Length: 356
Image 1: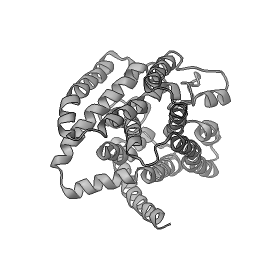
Image 2: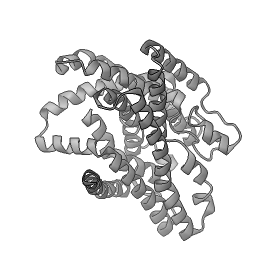
Image 3: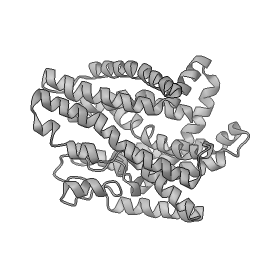
Image 4: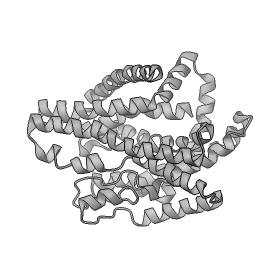
């Protein structure tokens, strides 16, 4: 599970910098495709959310009241992050360039819109509430499936109001059909089932003594089947791989995950966790320590890298060059530089937090 968290954490600067710096017409070129679609989708947020659900059983604070308290903290932390990674850089960019269309118009969505932290908060709130009222787990699983199907049927929904799109976007997949912005990144209906699958998986895994035999028995088929499914989606252009008419539509096909994509993400996570268990047997102690370090500092890396990505691309590059677009080579170099700055700062933050 540490490796499942560490890989996305290491790749975060690459994924987000590639998205920010790659022109729309090149987003499906091999390298941008690899970071945006392969790493940024099945190996990114879905994997993180699945592991988040599984790790509930490994936490000392896993009572329903603990979950709801954690949910409230995560939900409001998401908005603080939006101020840090968007409001401050965008206001800086506007002060320098006076370009209101780029820096001021998107601010309502950027500041009040939902992302993975807000979704994680809502997940813990809802799961904690259901467990508090002692709802049987089979009914919780059924509710999650109904939510996923319902979310699949009403995604790409436009209320005609930016404020309503943003508010409802925490629950259902809303968007601005004028093509300006993605209005909801991880709506509760569409994504609740992914970490819930992780929750059920973790409940089983924590009781397993021979994890090697366990993973050898259950991981290969989900890994092969889900990978094959994603490849079929790509070639036939449906589900998360549906490119649609615009990049916005394509992004929402991922953010507003269909029920079968959500289940495929969960199956893929089970497969990758088995693969990770095998990999960790054959790596050096130093690399293993690095993986553990990344996993432990995931929150610090996430917060720091976002500020550096947005500030360096949307503000610095845009102010200097009049565009934030870069060719692939410079984009990867900038991504690496951001990680090399982020990681030591994250370690320093972690040490300061422990001392405090």
